[in-house]
Every structure is written in C-alpha cells, then in structure tokens.
Length: 134
Length: 294
Image (cartoon, rainbow over all chains, first blue to last red; front, side, top):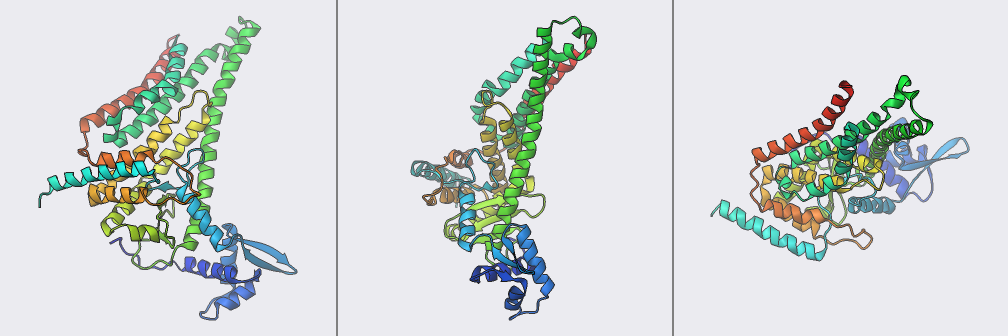
C-alpha cells in the first residue's frame, strides 16, 4: 500500500541496539562492555561500536564520562523519559508561542467541536453518495 | 507625501488589513493563492514601513540638505532612520533564530523518533516511523534531507487502510511542498514586529491554509470521505491530561470544507493572485516614483 524499500536501515538498527544495551545496563558502560554485549549474537568491529556511541553522543542521546583512561557512556535520558518527550511535543505542537518543530495532521478538539465535526462528516458522506449512486 | 502614503499603507497592512482578509472565507477555495496573498501582504507591509522610513530620512543622508536643518530635525530624522534599520535587523535576526531553533528541535525530535520507532518492516516507505504508543498521533518532521512522517500504533489501530492512506498522503504533501518554510517565515515575521502593531492572523490563517493544501493533495488520492473520517477520528481522540487545551479550530473548518464543492475556481485564484501582485507592486511604485521624480 505504501510502497517498498528493500534496504534496511542498518545504522539505525545498530544505534537502537546500542541504546537498548545502555538503557538495560545498571551503570555507565565502556565501549568494550557494549561491544562485548553486542557481539554475542553477531560480528561487529570494536571501532564500529565506538563510532555509533560517538554519533549518539553528538545527537545528544548519550553522555560521555571520563573514568581513568577510558570513557564511559550512559543514556542522557531513560527510555520512558524519551517517549514522554516525544509524545509531549507531538501533542502540543500547535501551541502558539513556540515554533512548532512538527506539522501535526490535526489537533485535538473539544467534545462540542467533535460532534460538530461528525455532523460535517455526515454531509461529506452524503455528498459522496449523491456523486456515486450505487 | 509618498512617505505618508507608505506609512499609512504599512499601518493598514499590519493592523486592520489582516482583520478584513481573515473574514474572506472564499479564500479557502483557493488555498494556494490565499497563501500567496498573505505573503504578499507581509512583503508589502515591510516595503511600506522601510520605504516610508527611508523617504523621511533622506534629508539626513544628503550633506548639503542637512546643513539647512536644525539640530532637532536631524535628531528626529536620525531616529526614524534608526527605527527603520531596527525593523530590518530584527526581521533578519528573527528569521535566522526561528530557522535555527526549529531546525535543532526537529533534529533532536527526529533522533528520538528514529530510536523509539518499531524496527521498520520492509513494507513501510523510507521516511515513515511508527511509535509503539497507544495515543494516536500523526505528524511530519519536514527537512531538506531525512524528512519523517510519524504515526503511532494508536493511529494504525484507529484508522481503516484508506483513512490511513489519506493521513500519509496529507503529511507527505507537507513534506514535499515544505509548508513548514511558509509557516516559519510567518512566525519570524510575527515576532519581528513590535507587539503593538503585529497581528497573529497571517500566521494562524496560513497554518490553516497549508493544512487545506495538504488536504487537497490527500483528496486527489483517496477522495474526501476517507480524509474527513480520519480528521474526525483523530481530532476526537482522547487527549491526555497533560496536553495543553489548544483549540484546534481548524479541524471543523477543514471537514466542513470537504463537504462543499471542491472544484477549484480558476477565476477566483486569478483574481487573488492579481490582488497579491498589486499589493506588492503598489508600495514599490510609490517608492520608486518618489525617488526618481525629484
């Protein structure tokens, strides 16, 4: 229905696995620890994991802390916080005084307006029936 | 004289003008032309204000004339000149600030969505992301590269396939036509004007008009009924307690519009384009005529 794409977004998948690992870990993880966890079910270069962690840090999704000679990585926010963030933005996007980051399909309406909308919908449907008699 | 004409025009375009045009509901029949009209109004207002300021301040810019002026006059003209410069600088600054602010918020949001979206199955198109949430949401994150259309599980379960198709077509139209740029420009314009004279009507109307443009694009693919059903279904979806009570006034207007004759009126569109052209041309002509004819 929506068209095809053959390619799987592998980088996205990798970022997701790394984040899942960081979210699941009780404490900040070194690149080695993340690498070890991810290579249990697949082949993955150490440098790849390092690159992915750096990308995530650049996007502001993970934080890097120095521990002795190594860097430790931890998620900037928990998964739930991130979800709450996204949903807040999604449902409050039409608030006027801040620039909307996104363009919503339609915003939520009051019950009164919802019933007015259903009446209007009935008119749309009846017009369609006139146009295409069965 | 020309300075007065331009100043009055600028004030009319900033104040009562949008109030009149706001009542022209026939503009909803030609949303594209209507957006152009609002843009033309904004440009004309800007040209008028800046033009008036420059004309008044011209004596200060000519040394030989300045010698004949009193100190008070020089001060007054200089103030007008400074005011004009402030308007321009504020506008440019506002445009840059809005573009950067929106851009960075959008990038952060996109990164989060990409991470949280359920792993893409090969059937979904590249820019579509589905969040594993029961609250129905549908929106797009337009960008030069890497635009996203975001839905949630709640949306998928609430809508029938043809309604879903209408939603995706609607959002894709926003992304294709970069409607966000139109909206960002009006937001920036709105912010750049002093609170006393600025009107939020152009920004509000244009937000509604680009929704209508996207609705028309969806209608061309699915017809009006699935789109209207999707609008009713999602606008009436439960709202979480923390979501602000933002009035979605556009929703009803959009569904009502789908019930009307949707055949585009070429004559009406042409008339609106003509008005838009005249609106921009008039202050430009007044300004050049005054500068060329001493």
